[in-house]
Image (cartoon, rainbow, N blue to C red; front, side, top):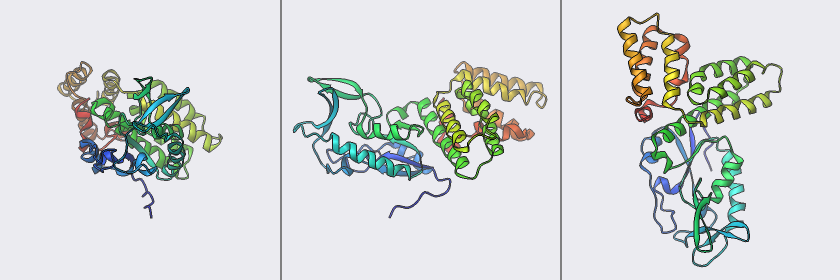
Length: 320
């Protein structure tokens, strides 16, 4: 029997081979160091191997995506056996099951004809173009469009990795908000706490969500929750930049200007400027700001998730 999700649990779907499970077509695996190392300390994984679960077995003939009669099909590399319809039926059913797993993110295996998120090879007439998406990945992303999804290969990019993990934890906070009997006041407090995080990603999304929150009273609850959730997650999907981070840090520094002596203000301004120029990682100015905020008990800033949107032990801001 499957264990039901615990309250507030961070559950992340993952291609089974990335956990070191020997489910590849050749009987091997693709164990990923970040997934099984730092990330595993903070999430509960829900492993899925579409090709094994659909019944192809291990080891098995490799499959690939092929353009046939105007449609992309999943076929055996040597035999030409067409697995498309079976994979489609299984994927649709499996994704419905995954909805009940309360997932907050998903890590897919890159280049896989079943799990690849993007740029999967599609063969046509002997030539291959990286235009495809894995059959299971397509079903997953269509049914759960707000779910943070990444490939393990893209997680080697520090900015993409930080953005993905940030969205995973943000999605948990969002789901927790709307899982309870929330009030307009709860939504206002949530939006206030997420302000600086949103501004670092997409200032226009923050403003649009502010207008939504201001008009929420009296509107259907499901409508407000749906619109806010979509705007919130799509806003965070925009990559934060050093410039937007520096703008947010300057905004925070404004709350400290009358609390710090001149030399400490100068030190903070230099750290922010050096981050803007790419000379310092984000962890340096954010740690400095956090120190001053805690020391002077600046309550508004203490309530901002921007100061720690994910566990510091992941050290994600050391590299952006």
